Length: 299
Image (cartoon, rainbow, N blue to C red; front, side, top):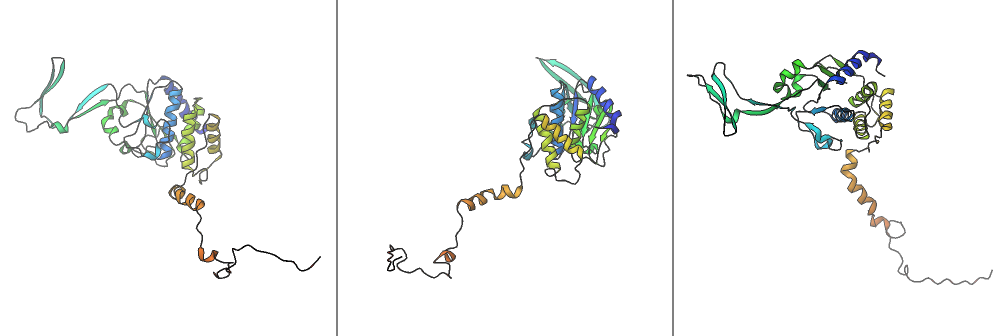
C-alpha cells in the first residue's frame, strides 16, 4: 500500500521491535484530525504490547472530548529523573553540594563571593526529565517551535534518540526522516495505512478515532483530496469495528430547538384563516347552528 516508502517502513518496523518506550509528539494546538490520528496510533501501539507516551504542550479544546483516550495526552513528557531548574549567571556559583538531614535531601548552592546573583524562589522550576525512550514519532510537526516547552526542557532527548516524522503537511522540517504525504486527505488515513504495512492490529476504539479524523478532515468524505486510499482506510476501520461518525453541523445545533418548536406549534395567520378565505369576511350568523335539509322533489 505504501511502495514508495518501503525503506522507511522497514526502518520503523526495526526500531519498534527494539524500542523500550515510544514517545508520540503533537504540536501545541493540534487539529481534530491530528489529535484523532495520534490517539489512534497510541491505542494501536498499546494494543500491540508496546509502551508509549503521547504528549502535547497545549490545552486541548473540549470539542475533542469525544475521542477515545483523550485523557491519556500529557502536557509534559515526564520521567524518572527529577530536575531543579533556575536562572543562572556565568561564574556566579562557587559550589554545589548536598546533605541529608533527618531523612531530608538538601541541595546546597553556594554563590561566589562578590557575585550579585541571587536565587529567587519564584524562578525555580521542578520537573521530571524524560526516561528511557527508544523512538520519537513526530505527528504533523513542522518545527521545534511548535513543541513549545517540550523541546527546551528535553533538548538532550532530541539529540540522542531517532526521530521519525509522519505528516501530510507540505512543509515539514523537524526531520526529513519519515513518511510525508502532502497529497493525503488526512493524517488519520496515513496512520491506518502505516499500521497495515506494519501488520499491527488495532481495536474498535482506535478505528473509531481514525474514522472521526478522516470524516472531519474531508468534510464527511466530500473534500477535494479524496483518493481510493482514503476509502480503503475507511473500509479497514469499519472492519476493525469502528462506527461511522454522526454528521453534525453548527447551523443544526444552533437552531435545533427552534426548528422542533416550529414543528410542534405551527404559527397560523389568523387573518388569512378567518372565514372562507375570501379576504377575511366573517361567516354567516347561522354558521354553527344545526342544518336541516328539506327535499321537495321525488326521485
